[in-house]
Image (tube, rainbow, N blue to C red; front, side, top):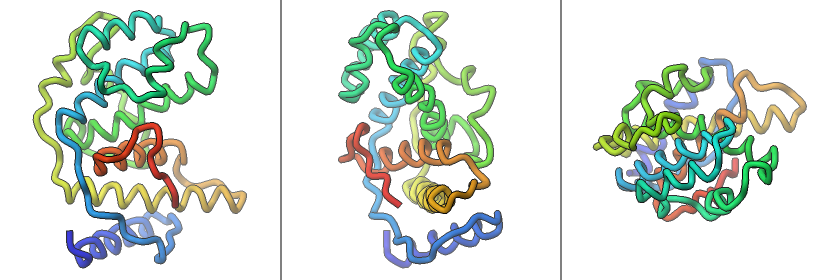
Length: 213
């Protein structure tokens, strides 16, 4: 992408943010060029996230681990996720379970990127119909609903959405630092931005995404 294209996206997002009555800062830089992951990598990440979310709803870790192994998805697990799958449910901390529950919003962002859902409204939580679009592990469904995904939105579309969430994240963090309450949920913004950052930089590590503002 040219610097002109990046600046045009930045300015368009700032106008959108201003129109929504969120604060912004003009000095926040443009993002680096996108280096988008393959659809296969995205399907793998979505698959393990969808499976791991079930643990936060008290699914037995052993069943989730076996499902992931059976479908050949172990290679898509991060180091932290591998460690989670080596524990018993009783050994999982509230923080670990909470982190897995937040996967709902990161997965929702990847569902947008793979065109499973139409929009990524920062004012709304993931949709009530989310579960119907994904494999149901409680019913021991296979991974077909994710395996059949065949395309991603364009690099420019993903870049523009990431830039938007990057600027929203700055707003949320700055409000918190000022002791104020943002008009949108910081956790939601953070998780969606993290997933998009991972998607657009294939050299990044899921457990160590750069999330500075």
